Image 1 (spheres, one colour):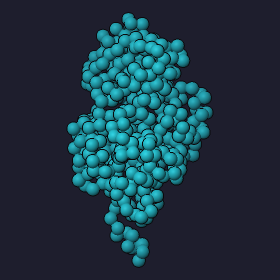
Image 2 (cartoon, helix red, strand yellow):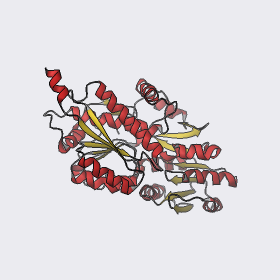
Image 3 (tube, one colour):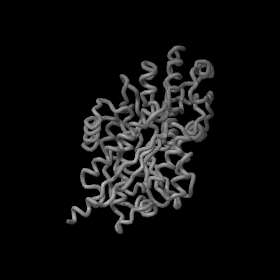
Image 4 (cartoon, one colour):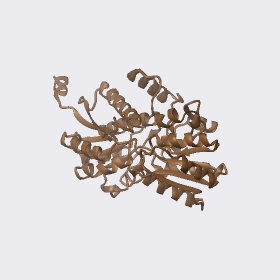
Length: 382
């Protein structure tokens, strides 16, 4: 009878929103698949005290207006929390909907530094489990300077992601008392950046740092190659996207970028995740492994927080409190999360969890052998 009563309880609605169509669908779909795989595994194990989780999926169509509409729809449909967003500008457009309705939002994909800074942390319902750009950008800039590349050209688009990332880049250079060798701002969708790449070369740049998520990265790479300009393209995680690697082809080889996850079976947890993902979606290659891994971990982080709610009142304030106070470790794919969030910190990832990735033979691997070895030991929040 207890089992029958439990089975009759309504499902707990969890929102899942991101760019599942449009220009950012490659990493949006990877994030979605990772999150859905985690929720399925949790449901298969019984869900929350016998109640299953129901995933309510909304496509933001890779646009800020689409993101706002999707957020409003999720609120109307009664989700208790949401996982989502891969574009910083889209997330920023929708944050108010979650905040004013007290619905926790866990962002596992978008990396813009302003996302968790819009509201005072103690009052905020916004959490982030991606590596923010104020971590990724200085991480890569620091490595460039160590290599002796002090004349760095910056190519940044004018989207919300590009605007925030450009500020992070300038701050990272300022920390080394450097100024950019060349600056190019461009609109998303630009079709040719050849002249700007030539100007960067003529300015004496030793490397090119790019901040954009779409095919523009490949435009820059192909323009470098066409000029015979043999400098390394560096940047945050979008240089690991198919938009760059598949479209730039040989020009992408050797490019360097920040990563939280390299799709190599370095421990049992990661091996199991890679095998289960490939089996579930019948793929040999995860399109954007970082997005998939972070989406997967977000599903478990949310569920583990829910499991700590003692009085079974599943609402926004209770979930926010649970996320901020949960000290139960989750042995995740990206890292082991313990006290991932608090009332003063809504960002789960710290710089010690980052690795430098490199494009080799059209795939991402570790740039440094010591990073591959360091990856064998789980990095805790620091």
